[in-house]
Length: 139
Image (cartoon, rainbow, N blue to C red; front, top):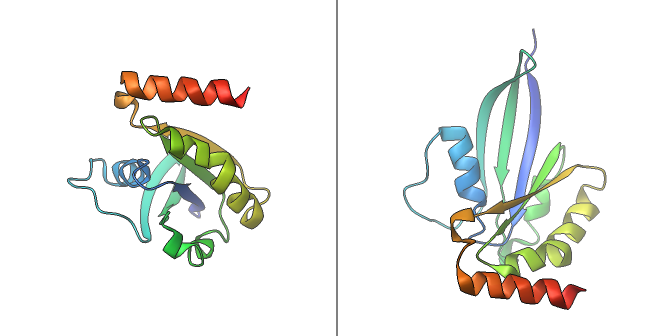
């Protein structure tokens, strides 16, 4: 029986947890240190409904220097993960302002999953105040 192949691309601001999420899923461990990503790919074999799925995990570079290269990650994408850090209100704000327009331009019909990372930091009082301000200003 042929292996099913799917491609997942993670986008989001730097330090939003994309690399640790993908690395952890593929390698079953947490990265030992933070290193900014240029482009990184991982492969994870998973089982879905009794079938093997080879999941290609594409980690993208958020830096402006890579705006011209990042679109090379998008062809044949099956799902997009838009990641933000719960300790960085700006990273959440950049989802509709920066990442959604880019992804919709290059992957108009691809499903998007919004992923909040670094949950352990969400109880920080300063972060709570910033998120509350964002919510109030959006109304």
